[in-house]
Amino acid sequence: MSESVKVEWNYTEHAQHYDKRADYSELAVSKLIAMTECQKDKLTADIGAGTGKLTKELLKLGLEVISVEPNAAMRELGIKNTHGKKVEWRIGTGEETGIKDQSVQAAFFGSSFNVVNQHMALIEVKRILKPNGWFACMWNHRDLDENIQKDIELIIKKKIPNYSYGSRREDPTEAINTSDFFGLVRKIEERFITEMTRDEILIAWKSHATLRREAGSDEIFDGIISDIEQYLSLIPEPVLVPYFTRIYAAQLK
Image (cartoon, rainbow, N blue to C red; front, top):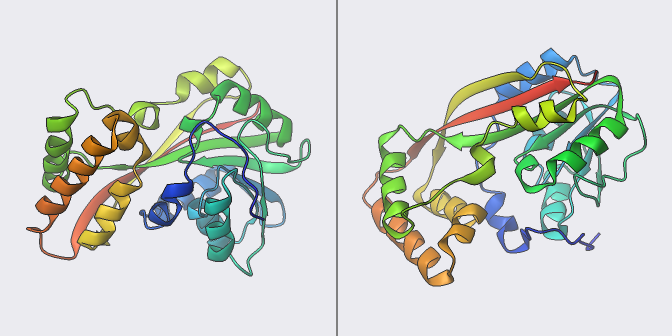
């Protein structure tokens, strides 16, 4: 399964680093599954599944999952991370999942809804969902009010004054509502703390595709990473990194 689908943002170089990122809040995902009333004997889709971060949480809750990922390197790590579980990995994109019509009870996008054509992806979601099925998208966001995170933001903005996280921190409610396919958008937010080594934090930043794009050159990006590494060298381990898992969910009309 070495095949990749061509997409606008290629994560091949970041796959190993991406796999070291924080998992989603178990509480937030549990609340999502309770709200959507997903059943263990019916299929759930994880679209843009990456290395299986969300898939793993869904499997822990006993769900059967179809995981769709266009990038071969990410998908191969996902297959290893979920070996022996009730999951089928497929090559596909958010706009073309390859999943049968009306075959899944829910379609979830974990840190992937910001890298698709959202209108086309929602058309695809409508096609694959069973009647009254659910759509949800989610991201992990660092708590930027915490002191270490504030300092890292200052390091970044010294070299990229107009740095922006783009659509991964934007509320997708308008895009969901504009499709007119879904009912009320509901939000779940849970703050959690994860313990990380300095190296793990640095690896996470090396995989930060938005930062790399906004840096505009390897020289600027590598300089930021170097400055973050120097700053982290002064921080005792383990480093307590606060995140929010933010989920936006809506039921098919």
